[in-house]
Length: 531
Image (cartoon, rainbow, N blue to C red; front, side, top):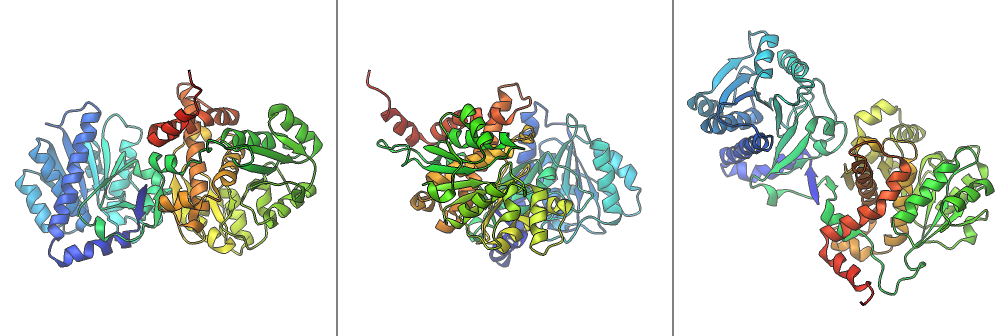
């Protein structure tokens, strides 16, 4: 599991070592890790080290010191180094080390930013070491003009300069992921001690590129993370697996209240997502016309036009493909939430939910729907505000509703009312297609029905009982994203359909389960017939 921290948490973890006089040691460790990351990345691209040029955009604080020390290490490997000092001062020891290795110093003060930007942009490697985690807001003045010009000159030139951020891209908020432009987009962010939360949420993730964490010796002093991301091993441990004597009821029954005469396909896709995610049975409730379509597309689904109270299930999915005019379906959605069972509430159900929910109710809005939800709760956020501050928005929605909130996007965020946050970025941009969210709701609903009562499984994975609903939603988002990638890979990286995502789920489940968890392979082998 990847753990991420706020800038304040990291600085507090550094404090005991700084007080012991180990500040320069920490800086040297960070710089050595940064330099090695540059070398590895160059080699992975089949590019030489000796004779290549490096330009470090250097601030006056410790972040600039990290960059200068890293450049001195790179100079020792034969790289030609230049530092552009954006402030009136620089870290003195690091600057001295840089100059001793033959580094060339250029000063922004009194120079034309456009000219220095041309020089920087022509380098083989550009290291952004202007602002660190302690910065408030973004770049200003001539430093902002310099970075903006470098960004313009290097835009679309992926094959030329390697853009590397030292700890985080300058102008990116380490805690929230908010972006204060101009920001130089990085191919690689080398961050120290622990991942910063802002690198793993949008819009910060748009600028971070690949994130590499370099240990520097503060790790044992770090507190509980502010944000977590499930990796393949975590997914394998959290996936439910049927016992040897399992039957369709013990494997979980999901009730689905979705679709309408206007949007019947949403019900079909939600049911397909649930069936592909391993649930033992799906019971569909809805209009006769939609039920007929579901029955034709998914003969495994038990369809009826009855009431929620007449159906025995372990979890509910409500809202996909529904609108305010669909009164019968909205009443069923209300009844499902009132049942006290785990619920995934999507799309059309969001405006009709009670004001106060429990963590077992998982809301799955996109940015526009989340903005509308926050406005109903008294906020003033529009879609742009949500997209510009996704972490704050999803956290506020969960705190105010008491439910678990999953914000769909390139990076999917899941917030629990306890304040715990999960961040998943397992998908592909091709997932942005009509019906993809309906499949996701089906996946999460299936997991709620199968795994919601299995407190022990989550506790073993380090997830507290009340947070397991958020972990289940994050698990569903990860499977959905990986299935989208599998479907896209099948077409050589091309477009996918929502039906294709559902079709790829069983294969994705199997890969995650068996390749990441040998115990799952053993369990599966016991079910094979004797030969």
